[in-house]
Amino acid sequence: MTSFICPLCQASFNRQDKTQVCENNHHFDIAKEGYLNLLPVQSKSSKNPGDNKEMMSARRAFLNTGGYLALAEKVAQTTQHYLTNVEQASVLDLGCGEGYYTALISQQVSSHHICGLDISKVAIRYAAKRYKNIDFCVASAYQIPLADESIDLITRIYAPSKAEELMRVIKKNGYLITVTPAPRHLYQLREVIYEQVEAHLQENEAINGFTKIEQINLNYELIIEQEQQLKDLINMTPFAWKFTQEKLALLLTQSNWKIECDFNIEVFQKN
Image (cartoon, rainbow, N blue to C red; front, side, top):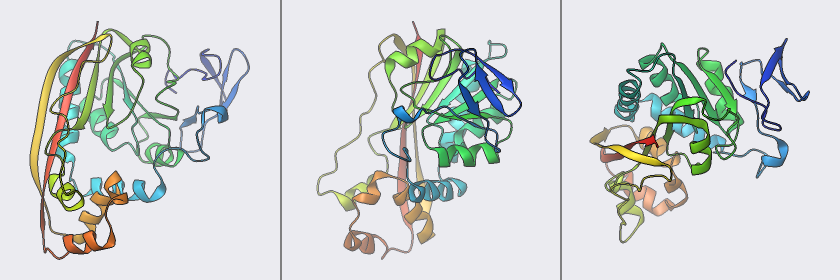
């Protein structure tokens, strides 16, 4: 397993058969798929925190069509660029979901050690079952079970986190790559929902303790010809709650759809 640490006392683990045990005798079983569940019961906000099954199924189906492949490839290439001069780097995909982006990053930087973390047990189970060469754990992005200054680079794609935890985990001069929606992202869906569409931010402020060193805008038009792909795109986003039956029916009267994909990819370096 990777250098995950005990979420209860922050001590390192020693593996005993199919269990990770820390020096304070806290036990965490390794699931048959290979992942660790390091989310203590007291840290859960609900029985099954994270995205629900419907949202995850829709996201998995949509990503498998290649709709966001350009984003995944750009993040992977950017990761490789900033690790060019780093030997045996440790990379964390924070809020990794089912591991789609994590896998492409791993392929791009195969000589480095990659791990993924998400609060959703269902998503991590799927990721660990599919991508055997990556270490995954169930945990909160607000309480990352990794030692201080143990990570060279974190990718954070649409995932919330706490600046203090990023500062703690990333090494000095290490990197954080974030992805957020840019102004025109999924504009054609939003204009069906809202009478007045509010643009997303063009860029984000630097995180406390970090300096922004690169801003990348990735914009492309996604042509969707299958109704199911469009439904999956909608259902993997918060827009699923906004679409009434009437608005969805209006959208589905079209035979194909041209949807703008617009992303901010920002690179920050720890001071």
